[in-house]
Length: 269
Ligand SMILES: [Zn+2]
Image (cartoon, rainbow, N blue to C red; front, side, top):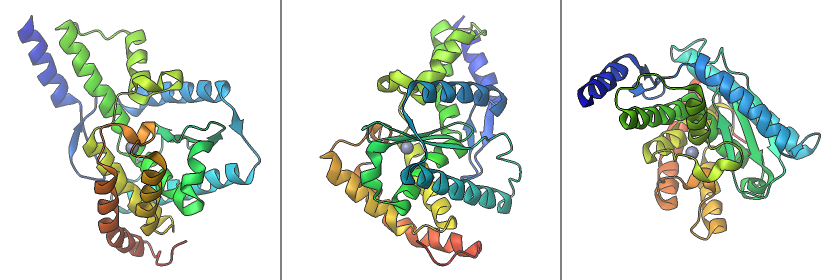
């Protein structure tokens, strides 16, 4: 029984790796876009129907504008680096939700929510771009799907050789992996390495989109000052400390500007 479970894990490990375009590393991922995205889109619509979506304001418009610029930048980067069509299944959507929680997230397939509570810390377009770049980077790098795959492994371990993963369980795992709806408290955390990766990718995308990457460290200084040592939920996970993050982002900003220059972007707002 144990042996069966183990060989199943090895088998899944062999078939389920996917190359991350941003790092070139192969990562564990059992779920293709076809499995993940429809679930994500349905959950996103449900979330929007149950929350107070703000439309027609300057702020809501700004979220959309920044999101579109970030998405375009991501597409340019992927095309230039040998991944044309990577975003074909994505259905980008950017929504501002009235909620004082200091948070933002991007579900698989490009479904983004900003809470109004994070706007005072963003302080404007460039700050929004920092958060947007980070969240979009999680989605582009399939961090959620990897997190869900890790959950699958745990579950396979628990049922030892039971190959069939029933849909309700999968759904439950999905909700946990992405921290949807009222279950935010039980969201499986992104790993520290995923956070660092999202920071780095996000910085490059925001620069290509024409936003000053120096703003990233500034945003995290404000986040640190605001939180009194407590980061908001998405950013809390198993985190690089605020100081490590600020130091990293400061060190990487010149590199991000060089990357942007390859795309003809040399001035930033
Ligand atoms: Zn994150």
